[in-house]
Image (cartoon, rainbow, N blue to C red):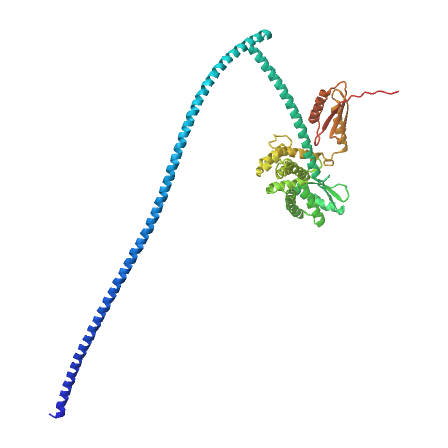
Length: 525
């Protein structure tokens, strides 16, 4: 084996030994360093623990000091409260002592008053005994005087009382009757004056037309040739027209005009509208007549409804059922004594509203009663019954108020009047029918009515002369002074008024004035 080969293992062994030695030395060094670190760490921990104990001691001392400070503060507060309560207790005790002394003083005062009351009571008893003795003496004296009076008057005490009581009652009755008479007369004068002012105020503020247009039943033709076309071949056109409208067509010798005659004013107006359209169009045959009549009927429904709506709008009345509005519109084609019923109803409604406002009542309700009071006249020709009954039933059917229903039924005194509104309707109805020009009357009938009025007044005993004045609204009766006194004159006026009511028909009312006077005549020569 060569030297080189032997050297290599030795170097390897030496290297290995060096490595092992180095590792051992490194382990020893690191162990020494770790021991030093642990020692340093332990020392640091001990220092930290010591510092913590010192801080804990400091904090403990501070906490103890704080608690002591709080305890001293609470102690001072409690001591202060104790002192205050002791002061209050001292005040209460002082007040109690003062009250005790006051009670003692009052007890002494009550004792003195009791002694005074006892002395007063003894004096009262003494006086009461004296009064009783005097009352007995007075009673005996009164009995003695009453006996003397009974002997003088010849009446016992009870009889005298009854007679005096009767005389007093009679006297009081006379005075009460006289006072009641004066009050009643004054009330009648005041009521009449106020009623006149209300009625006159309503009349002054109500501006109505003097006359109104009547329903037109004449149809003008462009020429007489049109009459033949209206009649048609063998009269078929005129028969168709009359059948569809329910109106009679009168074709006579009147130049360029025909007459329409019918019981129903609305149907008559439909016939007038239809005939006017046929004449204007020129085509007149049964089919065309049927079309025109149907169209005019629908148009008439619209006209009637608009007339009713316009009347309600003018008066400021709202919430009226459509059927009631329609029936009000039909009144435009109904007349009474020549007076248009719708115009009359609007006039009555206006005056009712004015009078209701003056009396402190509801003016709108007054207008509603006045507008609907004659609504039955739109159906009284179609149904059996009076216009008051039919009107009341109709408005009640469509939920009008009981006041309006009673106004429709009672404005002619057919049923009792339950509220003031029917009275206002009755007054306004009479005013509207009585004003000049409201109702047409033939001259012959007018003269006969005035003559009959004077004859009725002349038929009574003691009447010298009778004069109908103011277009028959007043009758003035002159009586014989020697045959009639004042009381008989008042009775005569009532009798004449009653006879006129029972035997004459007249619009509005008639005033009866009886005149009795004395005349003495001398001549100077």
